[in-house]
Length: 516
Image 1 (cartoon, rainbow, N blue to C red):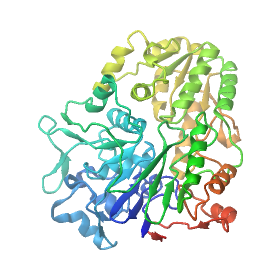
Image 2 (spheres, rainbow, N blue to C red):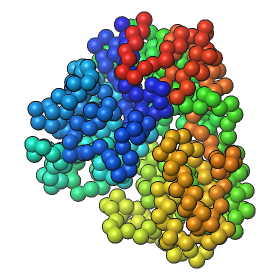
Image 3 (tube, rainbow, N blue to C red):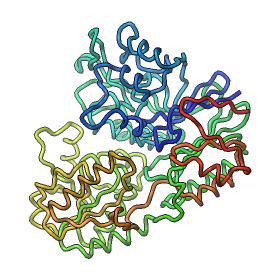
Image 4 (cartoon, helix red, strand yellow):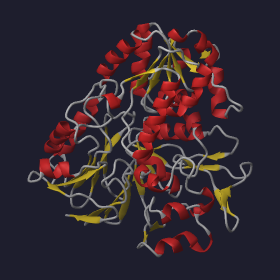
């Protein structure tokens, strides 16, 4: 008998950690960071303590109480972390055979960081490269070691990183469904890290069966390239998992093919996202292009474009806007590093280092990281400083988000400039506070927000998620016997709209459901 246990994604958006057990095979469908649960306890300056390893995330229920799946180098002496957990929770022993990773957004991938580094990760090649680029260019943090693990050691009380000169980092084994070989440049990217620490890498491998269990992989459209849906064949039938997907992006044909192929398998169960169940109409990327272009044409000063990190489709939209309005598009180093990594997998992504429309932002830094040194070499002659932008503000569109607002004093935007808000609206208390801070910055520099969700200004953001009417059609086309809504705060939508057509089971946190 197959079973599902929902350790994340139940009545929450993101944090998917769904344990699938079939025979003697155990797989997680994603292993993401639950930002909703994490924000109950932590904020920017109150993070989990890395020096105490697994203790904090286990005690607060950020990761499942499953012994045997986590890194031994994050364990405290005498299993201190587990002693705390046993007082409140039932603990299971588990041998994990792998993680099916739908895509690289942290609410699906982030807490792979805590898993044993030998556990294989099954994904698309693009997802593997994206998670590596994010880790390469991000903060060194024990919550973000998704692609490779930095070994730790315990001095009896504190867990710390080992000596970088003596102990190499360790690559996680990624098995990819679309493996077609790698160029020499791509191999070099995969097998090296930009820091001084040595690195033991594991070559990418073609995904195959896991202990006799068959997989099916389906590329789908999402706001991040490389997104996947999966099917797992159990003795009882096929169990399908959508990950995150949509039907209104440039690659919607991928999602349409998934729907057709999934229906042919006559699945026993469908685990389905429901982020936007209460939305009935949708803005397309083409509409974002048209509206953003008009906003830029009506702006006489600097334009700031704010959109989600890693949303390459949106970046390409603003590249078109820049080209068609006679402006230069200015990109931050982290964005360009990610784009260059993605280009190694998908040659349709432009080479920004030689793009006549794009420039690299020469941010003032006391220390330039190693990953950024090569970028600066590649972009020599294609960089611009805040001072250059300040002198000719009407010539630029600068891609920045809330987390880059502290660049404004260097840029010194003049009154009359625009801030195009091309991202999702705030949906929790922490994001609402951040949005208020954003407005304070714009007010201080007398910039006009375009696409203000508080004013109901639509048409500047195309969501990465399928909307309600399309979701109903997707489920009716696939026709599962059982339906499990995840990645949603409104699972009742599925009962109200589909009960009687399929058996809707609303999962609860840590609840196990047997499927037959």
